[in-house]
Amino acid sequence: MNDSPGSVADAVRAAIVRGDFGPNQRLVEADLSEQLGASRAAVRSALVTLAGEGLVERIPHRGAKVRAVSLAEAIEISEVRLALESLCAAKAAEVVTAGQRTELAAIGDRMRAAVAAGDVLGYSNLNEELHRRVREISGQRTARDLLERLRAQNVRHQFKLAMRPGRLAVSLPEHLAIVEAILAGDPVAAEEATRAHLRGVIDALRATVS
Amino acid sequence: MNDSPGSVADAVRAAIVRGDFGPNQRLVEADLSEQLGASRAAVRSALVTLAGEGLVERIPHRGAKVRAVSLAEAIEISEVRLALESLCAAKAAEVVTAGQRTELAAIGDRMRAAVAAGDVLGYSNLNEELHRRVREISGQRTARDLLERLRAQNVRHQFKLAMRPGRLAVSLPEHLAIVEAILAGDPVAAEEATRAHLRGVIDALRATVS
DNA sequence: CCACCCGATATTGGCGCCAATCTCGCGCGG
DNA sequence: CCGCGCGAGATTGGCGCCAATATCGGGTGG
Image 1: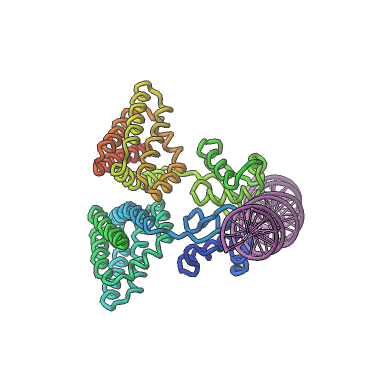
Image 2 (image 1 turned 90 degrees about the horizontal axis):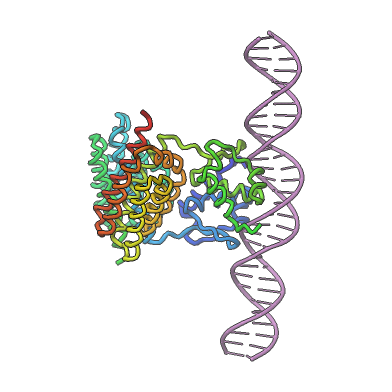
């Protein structure tokens, strides 16, 4: 009722990212219309938007379903993330302010604490928070928007990866290296640390094949 | 009449890229509906799609207009292109087939001929064709789709850049270096040649400020 | 017994109307 | 003469209905 236009897209996107709607699940316009209390036209518009974001697939006269991203596609997405996040990290290292430095350092500390406590879920959230803050600090709006879309497509694989035993111990030092390089205001180190981190992610995804 | 669903988006996109619709031009749903012979709902859906692609801006209750991308945004887009096209070039060098090699070599030859003849327009088309083929050969669908969207946003700046006197002489050897590296099957050389080329593009865009 | 065809059902796509909202211009008052 | 408020026009947003199409099931014939 109090929905502003476009909020249906947000609601459905959140539901997909949250996992309420699983891969390949059909999204019937009438059902969503009732669940969200929105008109069918609004739902349709939202589905068009989400199709453009790569979160749902729409087949003419056959309806929409949430897109199931394959492992190969997850690797592709991670390759693009490597290229774009390293760019953002380098830019962030150049323009980071004092306040942002303390913020990043705090995230690093909380990551250490989460790993020490074995808090996988908390670490996963911090992981997302760190990457998001780096994107925002970089000021590269184009890259930021694209990366946010790719992240939404990849959350499921990302989450499965975080659940793998021993993953935290590998991931933590990589993230700390990124934080340290940005704190030092060293663009090339930040870029290389980010590249190394995402190479690790890609290798871990590849290892899933075997 | 014989429009398949989604073709309205293609028609409007083509019109924007072609320049029939200029930056900041208002896109009134009723007018487009009549021009294209499509229903207003179809036009609306197309505008939502194009808004997702960053080609038009939609403000609630205030209509849609074609997005005017600023010079700063054009530089951002080119930075992202640098990151993604270098990735595609490296991958293309790894998987290029014999048939694709001859095709790329032919494009290189035609570029040389166009520069020799002073054919700026023909060179601009070959430029687009070369970049597109490299993206396609790479097999990186995610990067390819993103790059195609970015290209559509940037055609105006790209075209203005191509018109600058002396630009061809600078651009040609950079493109030939990319072709040569891919023909040689050398991923790191292809990546570096592409980076160098797009650094040149970015520098040329920056020079527009002065 | 199996394969094919055909009809019932569910779902999307399209169209017209009406309400909500914004923009622009006119008139009023200071 | 200028600023402000208000109303008319234009445009988008939403809703209900109907047609077009795909899917699934049963029935029939070989």
